[in-house]
Length: 49
Image 1 (cartoon, rainbow, N blue to C red):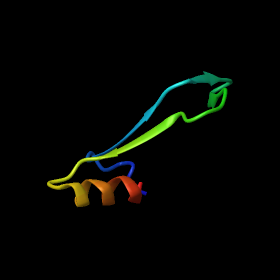
Image 2 (image 1 turned 135 degrees about the vertical axis):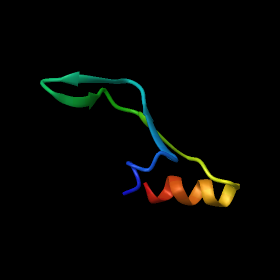
Image 3 (image 1 turned 180 degrees about the vertical axis):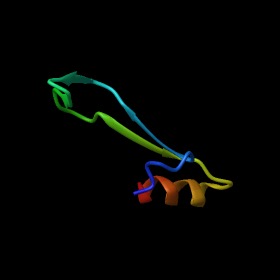
């Protein structure tokens, strides 16, 4: 994946650490954002992650 690429970011909400693991109570909790010089490049980066 491209998660270590500084032009790709993952945001999470509705999560907590429980016994050393990241857990959620359900729902949509992740948003992946890609940064690029145009929309197509940004979209490709976020989808690659």
